[in-house]
Image (cartoon, rainbow, N blue to C red; front, side):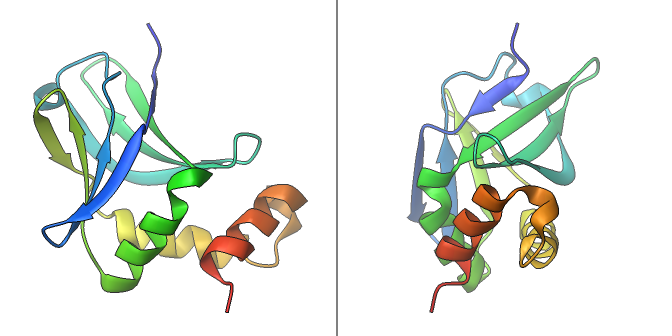
Length: 125
């Protein structure tokens, strides 16, 4: 069973950014936000970590959804994950994203391609 959950759609509504997926291997009611994020430089994705009693789940947010992420971040909107009619707030998402963006900017440790992609979406004038 995969521990990766890929966001298939993103939509800003009701003062929130909703990330949608149908491939969560366990009900969201059994999942806790870890309040921590990583990046997948190779896949050009941000990764939010969820946990269950026995494993971590990685919510993959591909580059195609970054413009919605940027807009929600700029407005301070909370980020929610929805799957199969259940919803879960991805707690501390904004703080984690801010930290990552600050570290990625002008930092080749994340890889030139990833750094450039972040620059183009989040820091373009």
